[in-house]
Image 1: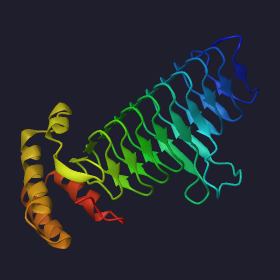
Image 2: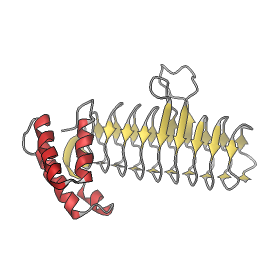
Image 3: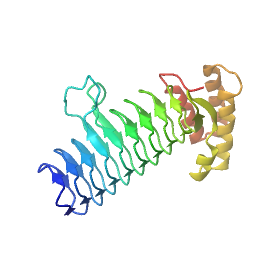
Image 4: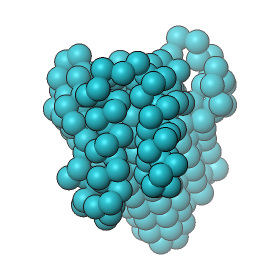
Length: 259
């Protein structure tokens, strides 16, 4: 185990022997760090926090801290982090609250860029990119392969579907369906994330189907239930998992979708 002599490590923490903890880091009680992690200098990690293998956390990040939610009274809640994530400089991630499931959870292979914030009770999937200074309020759910442009702000309790994309300085106050691009302040829908789909190996056939679904939802002036019904008819014809994902991301919405 490679721990710098200036790091402060709580005796109840568990750090895999293959991981590195740099100078002036503080690793608190109830922290578990898996194999092959690199904790750069001046990082604070507070538990209960469970970090799987291959993560890299850069300087001045605060991981697993208490939430500032005024309802929080010091209950034992958790942060769970998957594999091979990168947390760049100054990232802040808070543990959950008992008002939800008591857990903040981040999946694997995410790039969380400088000064991004992930608040209490957020659920973040895999292969996402959060650009500099993007922020999730409490109870936000983010799917997989999502890109948040710099300074994007997500309102509490919003859902962001798979492959969604936001431009710089976008403010999201309602759910954003899968595969959809949004921009501006407040957010407006600006198209389908076809570039992201192509880069992630989604077939041309599925992209074509999603374009048809997108037009029904956003370009035909249909009521929401009418649009969903027509997209479901489309999926009966094509039986496309991406179409089904698009439908589900709209139907699951409790706040209403950005439209």
